[in-house]
Length: 262
Length: 310
Image (tube, rainbow over all chains, first blue to last red; front, side, top):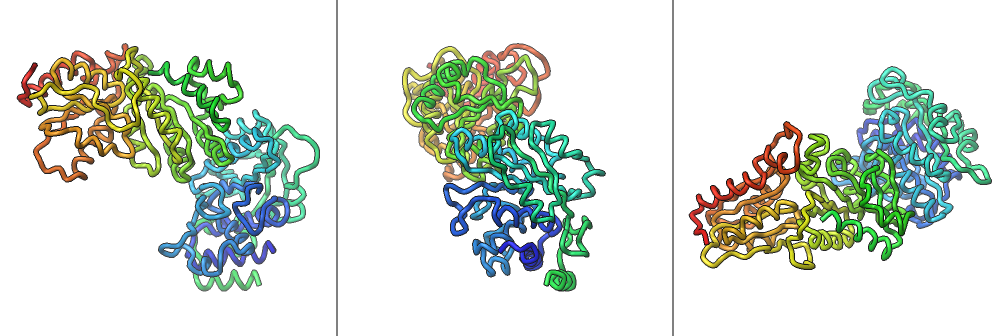
């Protein structure tokens, strides 16, 4: 379960059946999702709404196909859902929306998920709950001012059950993040905002799992894991090529993708 | 009316352990009682309105029932998209208090004046909108808003010292605050929020029915029968007529299929920014809504109706 190659095949299936954009955005966060669903995050595989679950907020809603891929493995969405993806009248949208079981927050509009995740972490802290909140954001999304507002609040209130995971694939919609509006140095910025921040290879599953796994003992700061990723990772023709933010798979590229992921 | 907010917050804190107030660094003495008796229930999130709405949504999803406070210019206007996606899309029961609505902050200029909040919120799904005229309506709106399972917006405008209603009111349906002198029922005044005071003053002087509309959404459909046989209706609001109560009355009449002749006149804020500093009456004056101007305009409107004066 949650084998990255399998998750990428689900993503290719979704993207091709739905003729969906945002393939590259989803492929970069596959290992992040695999680490979370594969053991780091506490949840009930039978019940996406289990009351004692950790909360996962996908703030960069454009990567939602990576979540759906995990839901495929979990049986939360079916092969039929995948074949009908984005068809008229179907329930799965092309961005993260909270009426889909497993999607905690609607986050198609960037800069929304982290503030809500911070509110969740603050609520849980007030309740002295042991539940954790995980929030996946994009490095491009860090352009949004609301993200930095939320970070101030998280650090001010010592929300140590909150982990922000930056899917730092170096791109945003229209170019390299460094060229459009640089958000680096992310580790230093998170640290300056009061986070305990680490950096790791976002496609090295063991390294990522180690970075994400909370250490024992008390902490008094929210955490940030800057996962260095490659947009479109796993497909040689899409890797580090921002055209796959918006390009749709056709028969030839779908075949090439599935061959590469065999 | 504003003085009545503080006890409501205190009561809610004492009766509901899920209740929290979030403020974007505004409110001052409004929260003194709450902060004195329940300091843990007041969260100043800082000058960060956007994230405040998201934080309220997250609190809601972990079992809290937050109330979010801001000046109407910022909450809901600055954070309209957060209200739409973080609160309305998930139908979360957050109560938004938008203070200083209309031209209350006359001396501070356009940034702090707000004549568009109702128009901006009305098209959003799931949110209820209230515009009380005095402390009694405020309490009724607050009780209803706190009971809603969806988001609510409570518009707090200019606070006048005297209440409109003699005592507690039940519910948020339109309320007749002055009854017409028999024989003078061809004209009716409909008003909301702080402008009910002006409408009532004119209605008393001319023997007209005056109706206060504290709930603007869901649409107060029971207003239509209260218009009776009126041939003319004046709609008074400290908000842009377009998108506000005036639009709402026209929409409800259209939806009700009323086919008799009925003219609905707009007495609301103009589509303009105030040009100069001054007190509240001065700012209203720029929109031809100051007490004297409004009385003159209403007299002209009434004269045109041919309604008898008492």
